[in-house]
Amino acid sequence: MALSPITGPAWRRFTVGKWHVTALADGMTTVDISQVVLARPPDELTSLLEVATLVNPVAISINAYVLDDGTHCLLIDTGAGELMGASAGQLLASLTQAGYQPEQIQAVLLTHIHGDHSGGLLRGEKLAFPKADVYVNTLDAAYWLSEVNQQQAPAARQRSFANARRKVLPYQQAGRLRPFSTGGELLLGIGTLAQPGHTPGHTYYTLIGTDPQLVFCADLAHLLTLQLADPTLALVYDVHPQQAVNARQRFLSEASTAGYWFAAAHAPFPGIGQVIAAKIGHRWQPLDPTRQVI
Image (cartoon, rainbow, N blue to C red; front, side, top):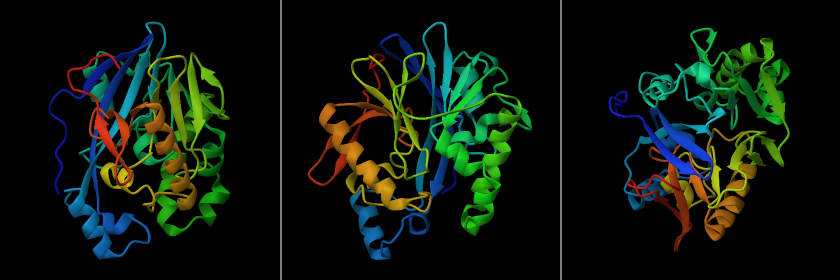
């Protein structure tokens, strides 16, 4: 499936409590589920696609989000940069369309250090966000920035380690990397939730004190329709697959019961919606496109 770069408006703005939340489209990528889903026979994968009315390879969105309270301007994730071809890596263009400049971003909050979330940290070899501190879970920084871990990692993960070090280490060298431990308030009314498994420090962010609750849920699911219907689907991207499955199952149950709203990195743009308990698993309910207040 050929994907084209985004040509239309690539941002949408919503209000949640004191925050203006702007969804930014970084673009699209495709995945062949026969290559990324673990431990499922081909006939089962074919059946899953048919039930979900999807065609393989499956197209997925890459979304990021600006949080702006009028004083502070934060960015959750940075898209893929040049790492995933011309159909992605469009975050800076989307940011400009939305009325922001990279120099206005005061903090980048990484959900984890995979290329489609941290690849946009650099523009060429320069810091894309020169005035921003970069926050990332200590466990992810320790894992992905370790030369020892890279040397011991399987061949299929070598590229991820190399990209992580190339994209994140310049911020560390500039004194702008801020590793943190999850729990409580990180800064400015932003809370953190540990969701390890996909990566060791995979982290969701929340807006403290807002009603309804909005959760920036990172890689809760890549194959949204499939993994909500069957949360036990693990992917080759998961560092610890069973832990990732367990985390997804727990959070889907909690979120559907509590009525959380999600800002999802890989849901169809703008990625804002809820998960609803279904007869089998869960389903995605996107935000009404006419709404501007969550």
